[in-house]
Image 1 (cartoon, one colour):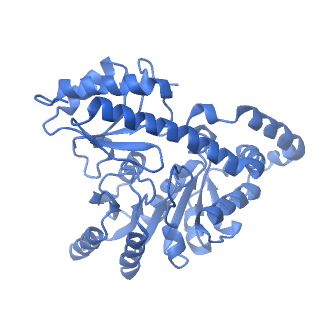
Image 2: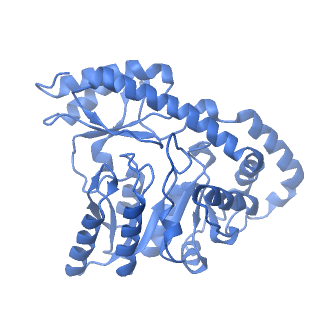
Image 3: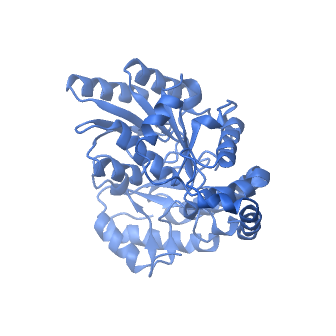
Length: 378
């Protein structure tokens, strides 16, 4: 449900609520609780419920054509917990984490909370620029600053929606490996694909220990399930598990989701992708009709977001006030900026909003942008 006063919610990265399989999950819950309920009096396995870890490994194999053992999969309370654990395990006081210049706001919040310094690397329409990453790492080395890891969302980058090509993935890995820097690959949008073939995960291109891979079930079910996972070899995983002191990721949630996904994973993914693609297409049509010539926006081939570049000179605070008055919610550019700058961008999330509301929502956004950008006209 949208916050009070919000009618047009382009703010949060959530999937289509109509695709949530309520009845099927209710049936799965009934079956699994009758079958395995007595085991719930015990704490979960440290790495999580094995059948769901096996589904995560199967999913990885299907998406990337590489086998990973279930023993290398650790379930987490959403992918955010995996990001938190990586930060706790690898960041020491004063360390720097290198991210894409525009980066998932949740990750930036975690890094700042734990005292990491943040260095942003510029993006273009193909994602992170390897030569800029190399320059950034070399500069940090000259300054005597230790880099804890490089964090990247290589596929359907949040917020830009870009897809890092294979050659850039190889270059990123080579640059980091040559400097002994860990790569943390956040691939939580991997299944939300509308067209084209995605490059393999960076994890598949390296040797064990080069990359920590993070995935999620939130973008195909819902964040309320609070189920994510990471893939890492034993040594790397043990460093994370040393900080995972939550008593274990919910075995009940894991059992229910595994019971449902064991027979419905790929049909459900197909349903989610079809629903979200229709919304993306409606958004593109509305942007072209209402904001063409006024702003520029990215054209993602998957994921949940489009990144909108606003007119120069726009008053972003005025835009926020006007949007609130008109019942609009979006992601502010500043929320995603590694340097916490007030940049002239906003993020439109298109997975959750009702498709019928998209045209009117975009029309209202256009009026708000015109009101906040003196001289800007369509």
